[in-house]
Amino acid sequence: MTAVVVFDLDGTLIDSLADLAAAANRMLSDQRLPALPQETIRGFVGNGLPKLVERVMTHCALDPERHSELTQLTLTHYNAGACDRTTVYPGVVGALDELRKMGCVLGICTNKPEAPARHVLSELNLLTYFDAVLGGDTLETRKPDPAHLHASFDALPSVGPRLFVGDSEVDAETAQRAQVPFLLFERGYRKSPVSALPHTLSYDNSAALPDLVRQIVQDEALQARPQKD
Ligand SMILES: O=C(O)COP(=O)(O)O
Ligand SMILES: [Mg+2]
Image (cartoon, rainbow, N blue to C red):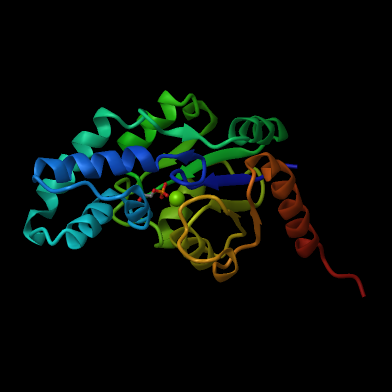
């Protein structure tokens, strides 16, 4: 029972909010501005680091003309401490092991820039599970453009049906536009209720993932079977 499973990163496999918030707050401190609460920054995650910085800047009434300078500064701070407080969600490692044992091939489609995404995956001993890692700056486009997700699947061998696992509005929209089944992690950084996001199945413990993938693969196989009359 194999599948091509592509994962979002932040809020799906890893809880990276504390380090993202710390980087943004160091940038603000460099501007002699007070730190923002982590909960505020949580709402700014999902569309990549440049967008996160843009949202912080709007919130703090910083001059939009400084966007590229302050994005670079935030990235420098993030790179210096990307794994200080970031953790792998419970159940993820066991689920990735089992999926690999099933013969699935795994990839990453994240809006985090590719270099820090690879660095964080490597530091957390996750990089070797993935045969493709596409970041928010790998292509000219990124999620919710389905081209980002399609390119992630295309970078992997076609061992079975394709499915996407993510945590946010951006991921749900990407999967819907790409027309692939979507597994929604309920404990990530989404802003709307689970019921408001289009998804195939949802889960709150990553240990459930292999069974959910099996279920989707079986359903896909049933749908693909020629109908008898
Ligand atoms: O960097 C972000 O804003 C979000 O990253 P993600 O796509 O891995 O959730
Ligand atoms: Mg995410």
